[in-house]
Amino acid sequence: MIVLKFGGTSVTDAAAIRRAAAIVESRRSRAPIVVVSALGGATNILLEVAAQSAGGQLLLALRSVEALRERHLAEAEALLGGTREAHDVVSEMGAMFDELASLAGALSVLGDLTPRSQDAIAAIGEMLSSLLAAAAFRAAGLPAVHVDARQVMITDDHFMKAEPDVDAIAEAAHRILGPIVRNGEIPVLGGFIGTAKSSGITTTLGRGGGDYSASLFGAALHTEAIEVWTDVDGMLTADPRVVKNARLIERVAFDEASELASFGAKVLHPSTIAPAVRLGIPVYVLNSRNPASAGTMITFDAPRRPVTAIAGKSNVSLVKVRSPKMLLAEGFLHRLFKVFEDHKTSVDVVATSEVSVSLTVDDPTHLDAIIVDLRALGDVAIERNRGIVAIVGTGISDGGASMSRALQALGNVRVYMLSLSATGINLTVVVDDEQVKPLMQRLHAEFFERERA
Image (cartoon, rainbow, N blue to C red; front, side):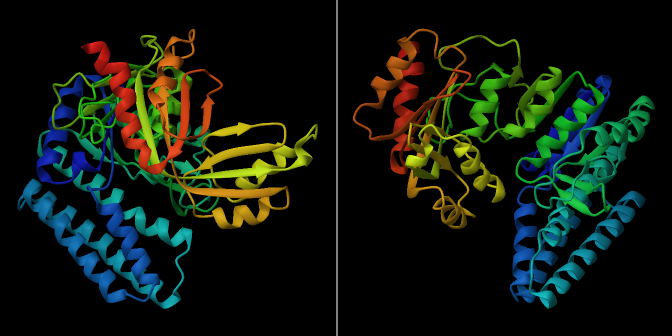
């Protein structure tokens, strides 16, 4: 048994869905389960519809709904033609769009966009794409069965970022997906969406939720592998938009992949691989536009390298808290991080001294409120327009040679924070935002291009 996850760019139109069907056909002997994202860009449009409706721009929102309807119907026509199945699929999709228009109208009356309402609208993208993909696969001769992912992905009721209930998912996966696979059929589900166990109301898993869904389903059924199909050949030694000579990494360790995803690598969200890590299920990152490419295998058994890749992200805020109360005090750090927990804001990099703490935050949504609460603990300073560059490799802390080369490559760049992860595989540097790209290029040249030369 294997899970195949197709991202938005891999199901963006009829041509992409046909390519996905061919890939599924090539894995048919391995009992595939297919998870799909919404058609490329559809989720962003749906979120705009929600915001426009609640903001009093109902006419604009309804125009977007109709444009999205026309797009999906056009792809259905291209994939299914005038068949009886095409009529059934178009009717079902039409009902979903009618519901979307009704939701938009209700939001315009209420004038208030709640997380629950936003999830109800955002989930429609995966509901549509999974229905269309299943029909297209059947038209291509595959025994595909559409499954409403909300029957399997059971979560709590934390809307917009729901927490999966692993035990409930395992039970539902064995009860619903297991018999379909054993019958020689192929379940097709949407990623990203779920149902609150307490109420039965639609939820979403938030950023990276589609890949996370695939990983959770794979872990629940103990599949032999999870394949994430994207529009790139795999994980690279750096972002190719920043570093032109970035190379493919054919095998990477789970912890390296997680660090890279956390610090800017866009191929995977760090949560994606967590369920697979626990069970040792290998995750492959592959290119649906180039299926012959070897891609990247994420596994426990990967080469130990001083540096595997360079990652970076911009628009980071650096928060500094200084307080004499820290000195020899118990529980201070607990109170400090409780502030971030209360505001549901994650922290990336942390450095502490006897009387101060410095940390980075990449989501500024609740930062103003966080600063107010932190002032009860000490003096607070915030520095915006910072960036993070991460040098990741399982062997970076083996001896001092690699770290010395990394520090030398910094040159005269001003460094605001320097941190080595507890696992010793990630050397993180906080610099001015404008220095992120040139520093990534310089480090990549030091560790990869110089070696090649």
